[in-house]
Length: 215
Image 1 (cartoon, rainbow, N blue to C red):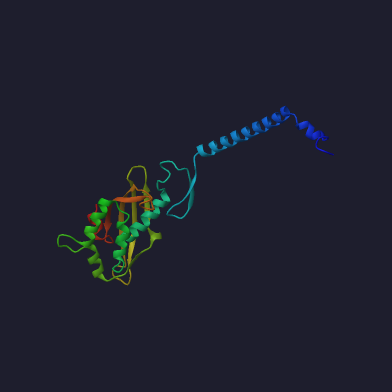
Image 2 (cartoon, rainbow, N blue to C red):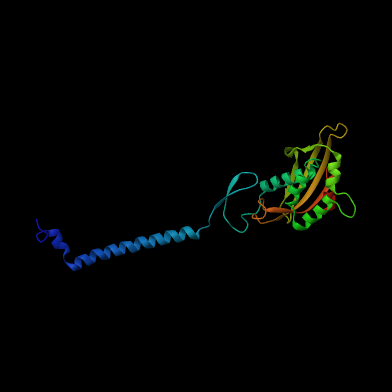
């Protein structure tokens, strides 16, 4: 059967019928485009959620508000544990590395004061030289530290109590200490933990000279 004899071809040869079909196709395309734009706008306008893994290693879902990157209590506890362990260990063979670790987590003003006291000034020996001259091994069990956190006021208040063990010393095998920290917010691009030590106070024999000077 030729094209001239086909009813189907003859039906669509009329221009008005083709126009109606094209108009329906155009209308359907516009509706689908409008629905797509509405769905895109809805997806972009709703609060975005991000997964953040803190110092404690636990992933958490957050909405990126200005406060979303503020350290939570587990992160503060982990930060205080690592900081005080390095600061109060006073091991003769790791004191330099411990103090470098602690200084990197201090606010600039406190960091400079801490470095001066650790290195020594005004003809006085610094804490590093004093601790290295003792030639002793010490250790602190992080799991035994007692940590209390108060975020009601800013800077945040953290108190850490613990015991430093002197390896091989039978006369004074343990030395108790307590450290009070004031923590402030910091950019996570600068410090992964999102906080710095603004001020610290200490008591007990396990604390070196820089801690007494940085009150």
